[in-house]
Structures are given as C-alpha cells and as structure tokens.
Length: 107
Image 1 (tube, rainbow, N blue to C red):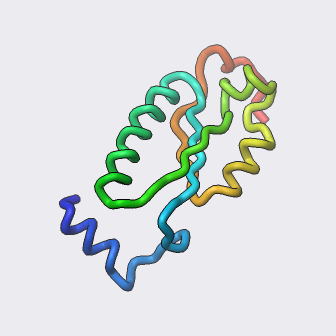
Image 2: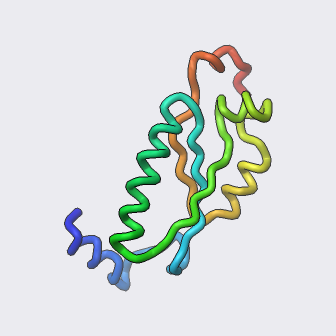
C-alpha cells in the first residue's frame, strides 16, 4: 500500500489493534528449519527498514520449533518456545518440516 494509505490506517480511530500502541514491540521469531532461517533473515531486514521509516522499534528474539527444535531439544515445540511466544506481542513463523523428520510420529 502507498505510504499515505499506511499513514491513514495508523491514525484511523476505527482501526482495531490486537495489542496496545507503544514505542517498542516484543516479537518472537520462529525460523524453523529448511528455508525458514533464510525467510527469517529476509524478514528481519524488511522489519528493520520499517522500523527506521516509521520510527518505532522491535525486540526480535528467536525460539525453536519444528525439525530444528527436534534436533536441538528432542521436542518439536519446546516449552521455552511456547513461553516466549506467549510473552510476546506477536509471533512470526517462517517454515517447518522436511524429509529428515517426515518419519517422526504425528502427535
């Protein structure tokens, strides 16, 4: 959307917000595995540009999920990741799954 549309949306009194407006937001990134880390890296660059353009900040923290979590913690979604997600203002999930973990039991 053009910048003017974005600015109008930001100032619209009818715009619903999922979290209260503040100067900084805590975002949990779940890169996952496969191409997920690459997607997350590109997303970080785009978010940094938005932060600069619109003068706000994001605190980005990564957590484990999917095959990367299985390899590191023997759990596809460790409790630490869930806790971090619940404590965040938002969560960005990139990509999970791959041939390496296809034979794991589905739960």
